[in-house]
Length: 195
Figure (cartoon, rainbow, N blue to C red):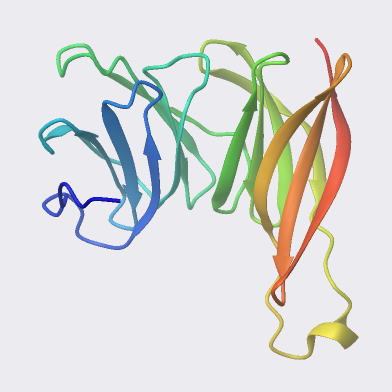
């Protein structure tokens, strides 16, 4: 790898998430300073600088709407950015899924138009009824926690670290990965049926 540019003038606190756009022209970054920045990669300039109400924990480029960034926040809310072609064609909308806790990771299934979200110590699935219009969570399952004997007094609750959809015939399977005491394990949930 060759170092080509340092993007240093945008955030004022720790950066929690980075994601390249599908076209490779933009980089989204989310931070504890409650900001999302969309950078132009050709010259390192800032295209958008958006201030939210909570720390940004994850940024995710929508796989079907290529100019849309889904933003997960520490307070459990989702926000989106639409139309990145110019600063004059820009919109922002917040979505309250009614769930408290930080959004740790996101994944999207284009066949069922469902998002899987790791929020707090649960995994939720929300259906996108129209472009960036989310229905209430359809399925929720709690992340399995280790026994007290194996963790001791200073144990931190386990949360999902990764989400991935896998097609299995007409059913989409959700694969959830966890990390605890440097051990990774994976659970599969046949949670989504084709709509």
